[in-house]
Image (cartoon, rainbow over all chains, first blue to last red; front, top):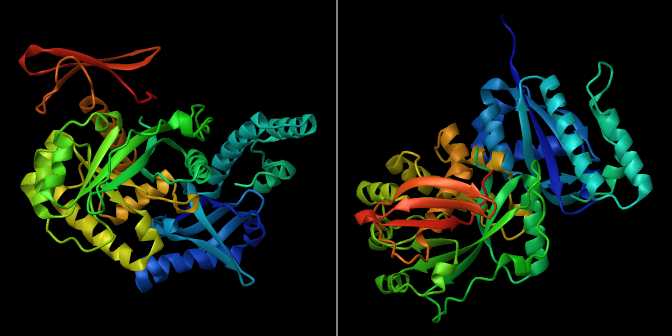
Length: 167
Length: 281
């Protein structure tokens, strides 16, 4: 079967500065990753990885990024991800790093992993809830996270609570 | 399956920044970290102080992401030796040295590398990544070190910070790989700030850059670190019978409420047992 095989890399942007969240946009992240690949693997690596390279999904509240590349060059991409040190957009630079969560062959597997991961994060948030109101919100979103046909990736987290945690 | 560990987090004076580092490490998924205290003999004569107990420094340890256990904090001592007379400190069994969980040595010359691999009682030998190695690795001392259970440590934070360091790191690492064939390698950060830490999956991918295969790279962050911690636990024992440096035959492990106990046989049929201060997963 002739089909282009891709790899989808799910990462999380970890930063100390809470203002970095607003800087997370697809162009900034794409540029930062390409720059890191260029620095580590040179022109050859950059050319190989950028054949089918895009940022497929981005969630600024939780800092989740889904990147796509060709299966032949995903090793070059994955080995260059630790070298991303900052995100730059609108002339603002924020130091941060990318933590790779999962590498999958399809968007669906990454989505399943992300749901489980977010459920665990919500459980940890539940333990550190101070307010009864927050507790109810978190519990409601915990009960509602599942993989249904029409649900998109962004509908699985409770945005209000996740915006309050700074890492 | 052993959890991920990071065996080199330099001990800074600021408690708050160490707490930040620990929280980032727990968020990334590391189940154990080791606080590193570096002693350099070239500077003025330094005393080896007793290790600060982690429970005093950090009243509450963060929970590791993905499990429900707290992160384990060990203590580690690194001796930077550039002269054979510095090794006497290790041989003289000063009582403070044995209180550290892991002992590492950083040899600066070829002769010292040979001595560290063959005779010194250490757990880790650090490989210089910040400058071109003044000596080439040779097979005999590296093979002896692998047999004795000594691990070679590579740092990755200098590679992330600076591009010339990156070249030295990769060239030194690949020359080590060609001699040791990827066995007994531990990759750790020397992160002073939380932003310099990287997750264990990313560190395993860095291992691919250094010439390790995928299984070896994953082991460098997980099983090899755990084995280095166990090696440190055995050799720092204070039993009635004195531990010799030759082979110890491990008989069994039992796990009780107080922790993991190891029973092993010494040369001349002497038996020893000791509690191993690492968590079992």
